[in-house]
Length: 192
Image (cartoon, rainbow, N blue to C red; front, top):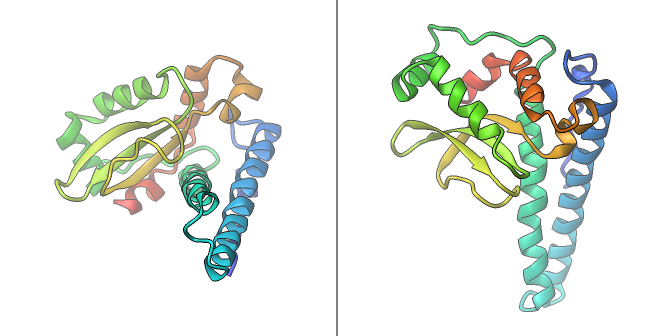
């Protein structure tokens, strides 16, 4: 069964994100879904044909992680956005956890944004380490490189150029401000 792309057209008209930027981003996401499906089918066929011990199979298996994570990270990203944003409930478990682990929301936000302006392509993720029950802000360089093993993504921000260049040029910090104005904290809190 093929994976089906989600429809994120609800985000069109979101302040700080032009419809052109969003439509381009949705098309990029669709490409990750398509490639995930193609690779899954190809890998199954190669396995049936006895080609699992080939360098080609190994490389496609590695590529599957890239495409899958590209697809899934975009879903986390689009899912944690909403037109106009929804505030973090100060009495929520997430707000309490942010206060406990970072010393307050303002301190957490400062660190998350600082991580977002790190030079390079990638993602910024607020993770919950399920072993220690501690929150961490982390930089992911490529889709499949830099994830914190055993951690659950709560908030995901895309900082690849395609996420902001059309609207903001090189002003990534301005994009990050727009991102923060449109976070759906109810979705982020539900991931906790």
